[in-house]
Length: 103
Image (tube, rainbow, N blue to C red; front, side, top):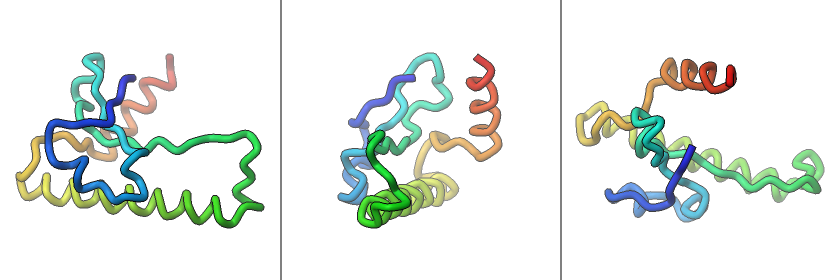
């Protein structure tokens, strides 16, 4: 699945600084229903031990919290009809996850 860092609307500008370089928006014609859905991409390092590295663990926690708040903001505006239906429901995500796990 392709994802892009840039988007045509102002959502990229609304991203908190802590996650600005880590959030991408789905841009893949094979999954058109997911177009512009935000995804958080966290770096992975085999040498990283989050149980032992409190600083790294806190940094990841802050990034996930910021992403969750960002998505909640998108969803609340979607409910208010400010955005197109670009943020899927939890049930949709579960169905897509099960579908792609079968491959």
